Image (cartoon, rainbow, N blue to C red; front, side):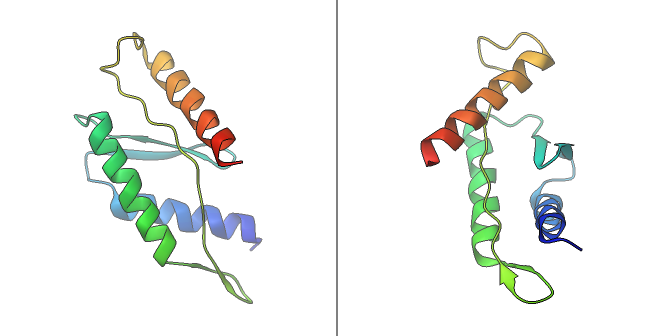
Length: 106
């Protein structure tokens, strides 16, 4: 299995293992995932991201020849934010924040 797919599987398994049973994690497109955290504000969304980051920083994925660590970028948005009036607004806001975070990492 190519390294890219092993990274996706490792990341998806981390999401599945860390989310609550009421949360929804799904692959959105390519290497993008969406995690819905019902009844969770942005602060607790940050807590989830911290737990996920800590897990991935300490638990490598395994390739046939070596281990490697998976890094990720994220964007957090809440349905309670003033500019969010629809599910598409929520996704667009999270996506905009994701790309801002990616740009700031460069």
